[in-house]
Image (tube, rainbow, N blue to C red; front, side, top):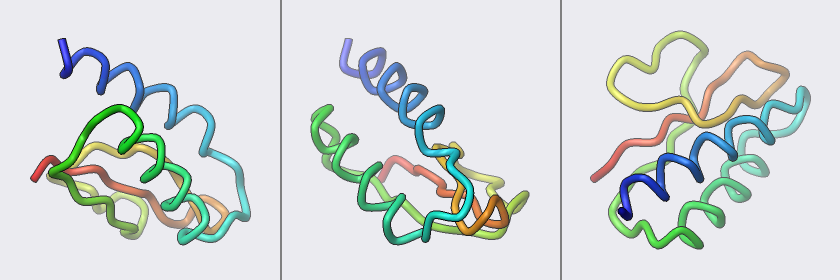
Length: 74
């Protein structure tokens, strides 16, 4: 059940954080707060160049769409 709630939460986050021009730190802080509010405790959230998220789930974009925020369970 927690996995389902987390997946739904992450999908809703991805849709709201696609704003162009926001800094990665700002977007990362917003997503981090939402993930923690959903009860997740062991994860990483990292900003990477667009297209290089091979082993994680993209949950947002930043820096005008040039970078992606990648969520990985830890």
